[in-house]
Length: 252
Image (cartoon, rainbow, N blue to C red; front, side):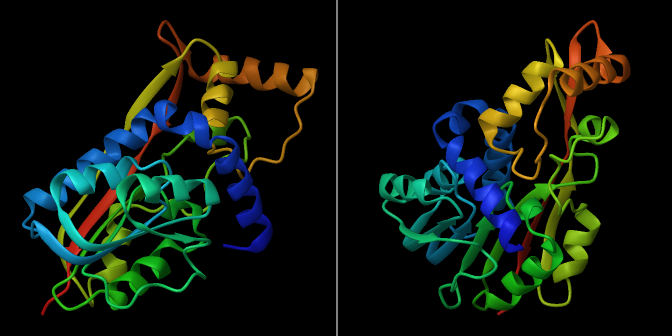
């Protein structure tokens, strides 16, 4: 992640840290599904060591700890506030950009939920993860695909993450190193009473870190009018989530 983007994203998630956990319902569901699928597809109940990237307030950490035991668990996040998550789950905390911080050697599990879309090259991160795993290790990662927040893209917002990645691309990134056990995607819509509530949702979940727009009365009015015109219905205005995920295992 380039330095200016890293700084903006970090500030955005730090500002939203207190509101994120209760506001990020979609991300919570994604984390639960990822941990559940990891368990159902044959991962062991006990890992010697595990490394989670983008832990945030602990949606995935909580789900992993509910299903698996770890001799050593290291969790990472860009925001220093996530050190509280490490304390809550008895994990070691690795603060900083996942692309540049030093990774623990040969973890038996690398996991991440709703983080890799913030990287400019998710495939490169997945390949690095595949090589970093210990023999017999497991990878469980979710991101978001190209339909994520398509409404915002249509009305000209820059809030979308830079590294949207479909399941086929995720599988292709690791298939020469790992045995791909499962890939998947789904598309879900949330509805809000108005575009202002969409913006508030983005603010509370910190996912507007790329957006540098300073709203004026005129630009907000135009945004609102176009959003309602294109995506309004009796249910309100829509916001699309497009989660994608992969579970894979390293031979050995």
